[in-house]
Length: 482
Ligand code: GLU
Image (cartoon, rainbow, N blue to C red; front, side, top):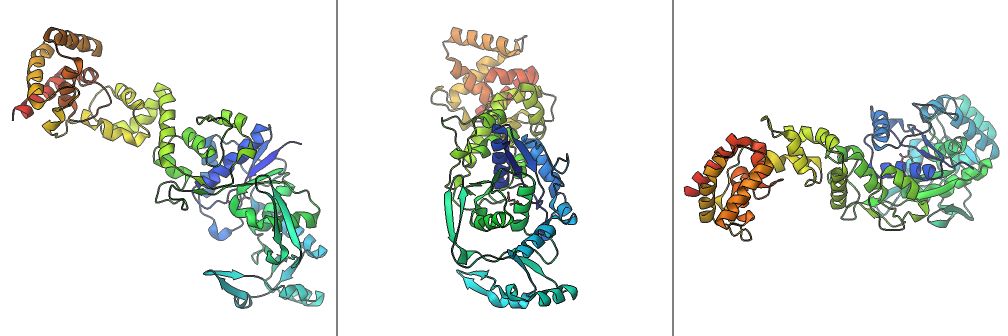
């Protein structure tokens, strides 16, 4: 049988990392077996709908390369793929009524006040367990209420005795006492289905073989199984993915910067790196490989290796992973991506491509760039303490001497290329008996005014050109003399 998985987001805003992980795992499970990956938009909670959120879903799937085989935008054999469209087709109501016929569900006309009176406080949370009041209405009473246009919901009729067991591929068999199964609402008073009902109907009608979703749905799964059984439908394989926490083992939040895919991209992360990182939030390969392209993930992904314990979102690790993707990136592509960050701080006509190449192996994310290269635009004010370097054996005094000695040589230098400059300075060092670092450290400091630079002295000389270089070296001398 062909594997079919679905990603079923609700259009409520940006794509949370947990949702992206679900999308990715569902995709990988299908593609690993050459199966189909379906996109279904779950917009039955009209109150939570956010304008533009469906576009975010499409953009994120495109940006991450999780390309669906069927969905609202491309159609497919089991559409429509948007739940509100399916409501209009009467799909959910038809199946809800079928359950009512079978005695597996019932109309409930209880108003807010009555339901409120059933609520009780458990551990600071208000819990409402329905008391099956409307299950006992006579046929006539129901007919009369419906004819009078009284608002109603349709509830699942769960037994209050015995147990229900369901099987999750990772968690194994889980049994719950039926007394814990609330008669959950299947159809709301606005005629829309709840997630709890729609997911079962749609997963069945869409031929979903593997249901991949967050562990927060684990506790509701017995109720879903009862629905499958009531219809006499085959139960899909369930794969519930572990929760994701931040480094402090708390819920991911926007404030700590790891809430959504879009937040991460805005923070300067590369889509491929985010996908790679998210794949490892709860799944690991049999060896210790960490860098995976999407194709490699498809090949390696075995869902039985998904962990059950919570996954920790380690921002440092994501930064490291991103730096690996930056290093491996093609030069031209990197230049294109880095350019906006370079132009934030450099307006002078310098060789920006060269500057991009300098930072490529040194940054973790694009926003690291400006701080690393701002000295190209303008020499910062700096302390002459920077000239002191133990290993290079430089002091303020000998740096001043060195710069003074080197000045006339550079003034006479015709070929201002990195190689030629390096040769000249090396020769100078050999004649004087100076080590390379002893010469380069003061030059580099005078050129940049910084402790660390993305390139060595002669490379900086080349990028600045002769005029600007000599000017900065003179400033260095003046500063050291003062
Ligand atoms: N619409 C649900 C959500 O966004 C989907 C859960 C599921 O995958 O079944 O959380």
